Length: 177
Image 1 (tube, rainbow, N blue to C red):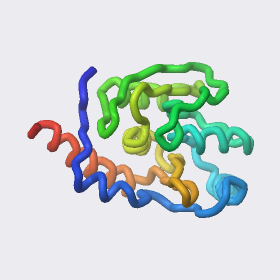
Image 2 (cartoon, one colour):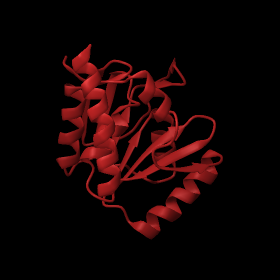
Image 3 (cartoon, rainbow, N blue to C red):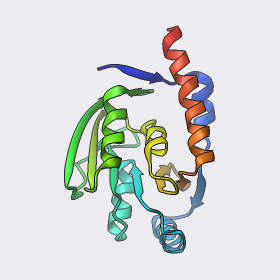
C-alpha cells in the first residue's frame, strides 16, 4: 500500500469547512433540495462519499454512479449499507491519507459505465478530493457535513484546479516526511 497524499495540520483545519455548497437541514430537507438541484442541473454523474449520505441518497431514489463508504458513521462501526452496484471494490486507505490504491480505484470507477461501490478499510473522507479530480466535468460529488447537512461539489474546471492545489500540498507534505 503506497500512500500518495498525507493530510497536514493546516489542511485539516481548512478541510473542516465545506469545499462545495452546504445544504443545511434535516435528511428530508437536504434530499428534497438536492433533488431539485439535480433535476435543474442534470449532472452527468453523481458520486457519494460517506455512509449516511449514500444511504439517504438511495432512500430518496438518487442513485450515485460511484459510492464510497467505510461502514463507519461518526467513528462507530455500522452494519454495511445494502447498496446495489455493478461492481464492488475494496481498498485500504488509512485516516488522513489518500493511497494510490484508493485513488486508482476511483479513477477506474469513474471511467466505468457500471455503478461502482468502493468499500474502504480505513477512512473515506479525503477520497472526496480524488472523486472531484476524476469526476466528469459538472458532476456532483456529495458528502455529509456532520450536524449541518450535506455538501455538493460541482466538478467544474475551477473546483478541479482547487482540489489539485490541495493534493499538491498534501503530496509535498508526504515527500518531506
